[in-house]
Amino acid sequence: QKEVEQDPGPLSVPEGAIVSLNCTYSNSAFQYFMWYRQYSRKGPELLMYTYSSGNKEDGRFTAQVDKSSKYISLFIRDSQPSDSATYLCAMKSGGSYIPTFGRGTSLIVHP
Amino acid sequence: DAGVIQSPRHEVTEMGQEVTLRCKPISGHNSLFWYRQTMMRGLELLIYFNNNVPIDDSGMPEDRFSAKMPNASFSTLKIQPSEPRDSAVYFCASSDFSQGLAGGSTAEQFFGPGTRLTVL
Image (cartoon, rainbow over all chains, first blue to last red):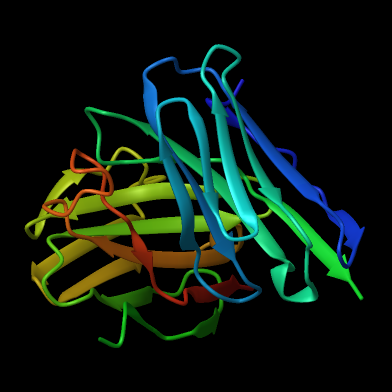
C-alpha cells in the first residue's frame, strides 16, 4: 500500500458542477497538506496548502483535512473548462522538507 | 524571474545512448529536486540537493542514473545507458527552504516544464 492513495480518474463533469477530489494517506506524521494543479504538458504548480486539520477556502477552491480519518479533499465550486487539469495531492511531516505526492486525478470539465 | 528552466523539452533517443537532462533553478533557491513522472507510478522523487550537495538519492533507480549540481544555478541528470523503461517526463523543481509556507519547515516547490524522454 502506498503512503498516499489517489484515484487517477479521469473525472468528467459538466461546467458549473461542484467537484470533489480526494486522497487518503497512512502516515499519521503528515501535518502539511498541499494540492498541486498540473495542466497538460506543464509542471505541477501549488494551488493550496493546509496545515493540520480543518478547512481553507480560496475563491472557488476549498481544501479540507480530516486527520482522524487520514482523508483530504479539494472542492471546486462552479467548475470551469479552464479547471481541466490533473490535481495532485501532496503531504509531508513537520520534520521533512520532502512531500509525498499522490498519483494525481485527471479532471475534465466540459462546456 | 523566468522560473525553473529545463532543456531539452523533448528527447528521443535509442536504447543504449547517453541522455543528459539540464536544469536551471530559480535564482536564490537553495534546494533542487529531480522527479520522474509516469502514468503508472505518478511523480517519483529521484534525488534532491540542498546548497548544491546531494542529500537523498535513494530514489535513483539504479547506477545508470547520476545527477550533479556543480553550482547553484545548474544541475544535470544523466542516464547512461538509456533503456526503453526510462521513458517518462522528468521534472526539475527548486525551492527555498528558508521560506516556509507556514513559517515552519514547509517550502513551495516550483517545477519546470519537464523533459519528455522517449527511449526507443
